[in-house]
Structure formats: structure tokens, C-alpha cells
Image (cartoon, rainbow, N blue to C red; front, top):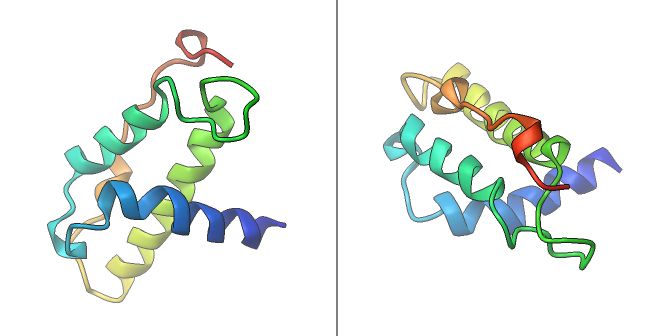
Length: 95
């Protein structure tokens, strides 16, 4: 089940937002914009509302952070741009 979430996240969420960049070109601002967009309206695709839950956004961020952590370990990038992401407070999100 967990691997299905990762696969779905990687295939459906990340490429539209970050897929036009080389790995080394992605900056913290790119990741921040992606996460901020995920916290906005119109992100749910299952018909159960307009907003992703804060837990879903954090899971998507965890996938991205993991990808960048691995790339950093392999010395493909000089830092992990997902480490500096700031989340909106849960109370400001609509669930």
C-alpha cells in the first residue's frame, strides 16, 4: 500500500510541478511553491472536497524529501532543497 502511494505521488504529482527541471536546478523555492500549491484549492482528485489534507501534503513532501536525500547521498546534488519547506498551519487548511 505504501509503495502504491509513492508510485502515484511520483507519477501524478511531482512531474507536472518539477519535471521540467534538471535535478541540480531544483531550488528550495521550487519545492516551496509546489508544496504551497498542494495546500491550495483544487488539489483533491477524488471528488471528496477541494483541498488535500495536511497529512496528504506532508506525505507527498516526505516522498520528495526522500528522493532528494538519496540524490544528495549519491552526490548528484549539493544540498536537499526539500529540507527548508515551510507548511501552512493546519488550521488554515480546509479539509
